Each structure stands twice: as structure tokens, then as C-alpha cells.
Length: 209
Image (cartoon, rainbow, N blue to C red; front, side, top):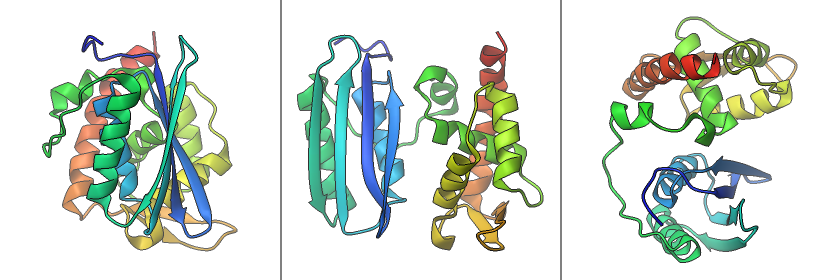
């Protein structure tokens, strides 16, 4: 398959975000190597011991391949994911420890971004100061991307970013009305804010067309 940066593949990655909760992360149209990078980001939100399932579907031919694996090592999981993606797509994947440059990120296809990734962009770019709720996020998300996002989905994504206090968000309150705050004092959060602002500055031009 030529390296055009776009494919017909839909990737679905199912993982445990807590002992009793299974989450499904999806992305589409990207090359297998890019899908592997996105799965790797999801691994940081998963609970060990790991129990994962990956499904790769070709939207043109209708062909589908699936792979389920258990283990306790993230590196072991990533290597098995890599082998499966190469076998199911016929593409060779070269893993890199370097993060993609801003230019590579900015040129990524808007359609390949998942709802979770788009919500992250909104949070990093729009809520650098003060507290916010899932309703606040939903309103800005819908205004930015002109897409509906259920409040329950936003709440699930926010809990994922909070990640029991280990993520980039602080959470205040109770189930009747959680409020969140970005941990802007963390260096990684500062980097994500700058990245999100750059990406949204381009995506808003595309979405507005």
C-alpha cells in the first residue's frame, strides 16, 4: 500500500479504563503506524493486567480482522499490536520513540481524529484558566466542530482525562455535578495546550468551509 497518509481502515481498540469498565477507542483513515501511536496513548489510561481487543475493518472491501491479547507489560502489548496491524493490513510499521513534529501534526487529516481527540483539543485550548463542567465542554465542542456530542459522552471523556487523579485534570465535587481544572502547572499540559491551539487554528478553517 502506498504511503499516502490516508487509508480505508477503521480501527477499534477495546480496553479496560477501570476494573469494571470497558472503553472503545476508534480512529479511521490513518496508516497502521499512526493507529499504533494512538493506541499507545490509550495504554496510559488502561488498567493492568491488560486485556485488549483490536478490530481493523476495511470500509471499501468490508474485510475485518480482530485480535485479542492479555498481558502485563505495555511494551509487550505494543509489539503484539504492531505484528497484528502489519499482518492485517500488509503495511510495514517502524516504531519511533520520537513525538511527531508540530508540522506533521498540523497536516494530519481532520477526518482521522476521534471524538475523544477533538474533545481534548477543545479542553487544552479553551480551558486554560478556571474550572469547567461537562456542559461547558459540550457547548464549545459543538460550536467548534459543528457536531453533536452527548453530555454523557463528554462526562466519560473527562473522567478518562482525570484518570483517578493521575491524568491532566483535577476533579472537584460529586456525581451530581463534577467540575474540572487543567493542571496547567505540569509541563506536559503546557505542551498540549500549545499543540491544541496550533491544531485548532487550522481545523477551524477547515470546519468552517
